Amino acid sequence: MRQKPVIGITGGYVKHNAFMEGVYVHHDYHRSVAAAGGIPIVLPFLNPEAALEAAALCDGVILSGGEDVDPLYYGEEPHPQLGYTTRERDEAEIALIRHALEHSIPLLAICRGVQILNVTLGGTLIQDIPSQWSDPLQHSQKVERGRDTHAVAIEPGSWLAEILGAMRIRVNSLHHQALKEVADDLKVAASASDGIIEAVEYTGSSFAVGVQWHPESMAATNPLMKRLFEAFIIRCKKQQEA
Image (cartoon, rainbow, N blue to C red):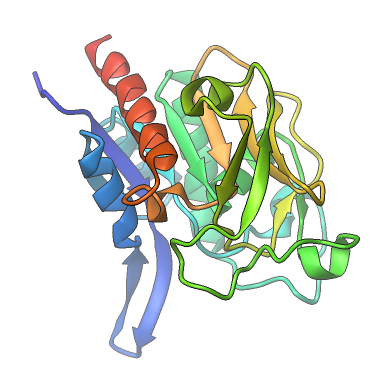
């Protein structure tokens, strides 16, 4: 039996030039998973069938950040400020989320990840915060990736409050989309001062938590973000043993 849980990290798309393109995962994800006691592997988006086959290798899944979610999947037309979308990734991750929730595979959804989790369960998104939200904070920061730039209020009684042991934390912020209508099977676990939803938790029997910030890029220097990954790995290890 493996001593460490295997954590699948979904990949995004990047194109360097005409001869170099493919699946991309920022190395902060790998480093944070390994530091917390897991074995990170990258899950490419081939098709829904391949996503489910890959899930069989995993004791837990991290839905990583990246490109925008196609509004097709929540019944809207594209906003002028909608960014690049990859429908193949959307379809693979939707299938992966449904499979994980059905088979009790723990999920940690980060940035785009929390958005596709919400969409999969029937929620909708703000396609562009600056043009669609009244008096927003700066959610797409202009400093280095790992620096915290705004505060987040944690909901009492949430898993995040229990794990982090804090009701107010500082986070980094690298997104221009956010949750709008929250899916019925999710509950809000954190919000920014401008009202933007910053975290949700699944209300069903499976474990799934999503955060809008990037804890993987803060975990090396921020004890609370490190604790988040450690708690997730513990969940995955329990699933592995089960």
